Length: 90
Image (cartoon, rainbow, N blue to C red; front, side, top):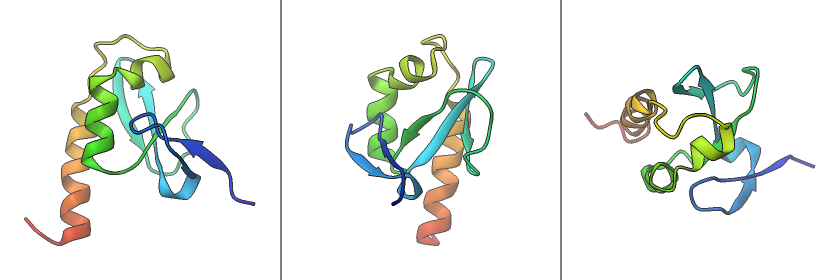
């Protein structure tokens, strides 16, 4: 049986392989693509909608127990490149 996690954006449960793990290094949020970084992690669907909802609700700060002003620039960059990889668009 595959592990199930809850998306911090839309709050739905999904298999771990369908979600993306976000970790905090200092005050910066980073994508943990291998899901192996030490410390707490927050799980989110790799979609712009779920990321935006999670950022608006400050869900990453609560789940990771970091400052609400944590830098999400790396998440935005990853999400933009992820859309390009999937869609093949520029």
